[in-house]
Length: 306
Image 1 (tube, rainbow, N blue to C red):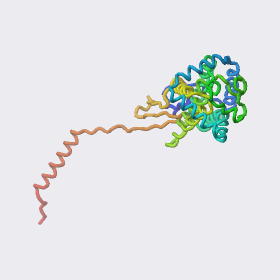
Image 2 (cartoon, rainbow, N blue to C red):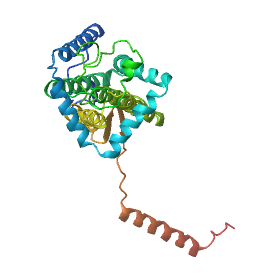
Image 3 (cartoon, rainbow, N blue to C red):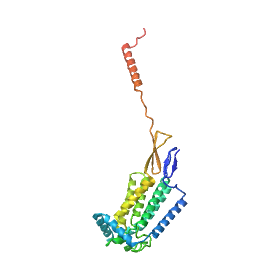
Image 4 (tube, rainbow, N blue to C red):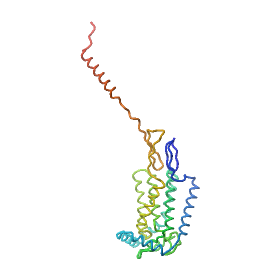
């Protein structure tokens, strides 16, 4: 009988890979999630806020982007803010959905995909810790503060929780633009759901990080290079923490069984042993049958009794 450990279910006798701490009861998981979010906010608030250094880092990042990319950032920002309704929706999307959807995916995994939950939770915590370290070491001002002419969508649309320009207060860290944790979390949701769901439609979950990337750039909160850094950070974290998303495990106790471990489930395909034919015996049997047939034909029909 197989055993389940930390998101991988393997046949008996196979060593399960360790990818994080085990799934706990929901009160403890909820406590860890709340404590982690509070620690995240506290670290952001305590991070050094140096406007001059953050602006200088922003200029470096902006200079690393090609001219067409910078032009696209400006165009997206101006095109969005020319229409109040989509601008307001984008502002609320930026402020609220990233935390709500990420928490919802984490809770859904705990309930419906317990085998995948521990892996996914460990990757989420790891990529968040790495991003916090970068925020502390390398503060970067967002385009709305560093690029002349970029509209601050959150302020102009009066989105609750948005920090005033040049302020270090509110729910937004003004100098935490690089990397984009919004994009990293959105890509994490898509990665986890793509492993948990079945069918071809599961690929549609990648529309969420694509839309998030568009929103964070259009609202003036991130550069395109921030988006790339967020995606790269998640990719590296998955490789280091989780390893391969698809593992092939061969059970020692059942050599003829090949087990594919994916998304915390087991699909076992047993191949029957290949039958080997004795070609020599087969040929001899065929020759004997042919000889008997020829003898019967030469003898003719049996004689009748008088």
